[in-house]
Length: 415
Ligand SMILES: *[C@@H]1O[C@H](CO)[C@@H](O)[C@H](O)[C@H]1NC(C)=O
Ligand SMILES: *[C@@H]1O[C@H](CO)[C@@H](O)[C@H](O)[C@H]1NC(C)=O
Ligand SMILES: *[C@@H]1O[C@H](CO)[C@@H](O)[C@H](O)[C@H]1NC(C)=O
Image: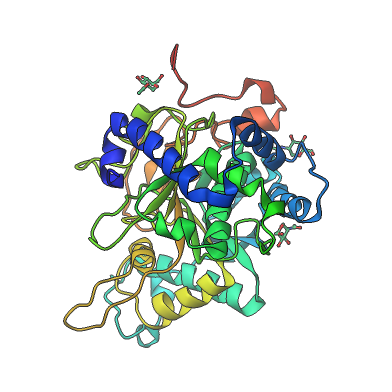
């Protein structure tokens, strides 16, 4: 089996590995070998909620997944962190959520000058700049989730943007991650596949057979019951980087109409290759245990995840920008001289991301409360990595011109 790293950089390897994975999948399924093209189609339809199998467990699972279409995207709550004084950001985010039938609650961002030095945790290397305020804003959000006992919450930074089809995208993400979690809880099958990648169709096909799996439990969250963080808005992540003993499992989808063309993918690391390099157009990668994630534009936490972050990234340390701490939280940190090993936690990521930063028209220094002032003026707003951005299309959506939505990253002929 080629390593995931090779697969990611080599389209030919993707094909070969796909064949290998499919055959291994069917060989080791044993009692689940009833998957055929027709059951795959049936299960895909079933997951889209257009076909009710009539049985209790399958329809309970179907209903749970359809919670993703509710106004909090299948999470218990959505929180947006924003300085009280940034009325411009609050106006814009409020309109964006309203246009996609989403409800959120603002929580106040924190200015670094409002943080008392003595409140910092023992490992507190974080610079006394906007980064320190941003860190505290995220930790306040975690405290909110913990004190209210919410089962899950999506945390947004104030400039987050998404595709008008975000609910379908999240439903698809959930099916990939939920399928792996349910299968792993049921049998070590997917856990043993760590370091490989699975075809999305195989995961849905397996899920479509819920009824034949007597000891499956329908999870409380449509995203599954065994996760700490779902890192949905990132500026890039990798697989298997940094740690030799670390294996990312990827669920690869190859027919995602909402995925941007591969050459348009924008990633934080300009120097090095990234996961979407050499990938197929219309593909999206759902990553269990991603590494090198950057940017905390949007991520969900479970109650367990919020408690862990509050403890580990709030009370025990504040040594880096929050997104880099989240990266450590997900991938763990090997033992070092002055501290013991920090273990990894259960995270899922997605490439290309489902949420990204909007850069609005107007003065560029409006973008950040962290960076300094900058007189440049941008004529038109844009968002990387999102094909049909809500913010780019805000005027059309407000005017009810839904049919004329702009694709910021259209495909050319024949792709
Ligand atoms: C949306 O679904 C989630 C998951 O079932 C649930 O916790 C949340 O309360 C629902 N939101 C609303 C507004 O009903
Ligand atoms: C929001 O809800 C309205 C009314 O139900 C619906 O017409 C519209 O298509 C929804 N918009 C999105 C983006 O889901
Ligand atoms: C993906 O689509 C883009 C835009 O249409 C095209 O330029 C590119 O060649 C396609 N890549 C592959 C591998 O088909």
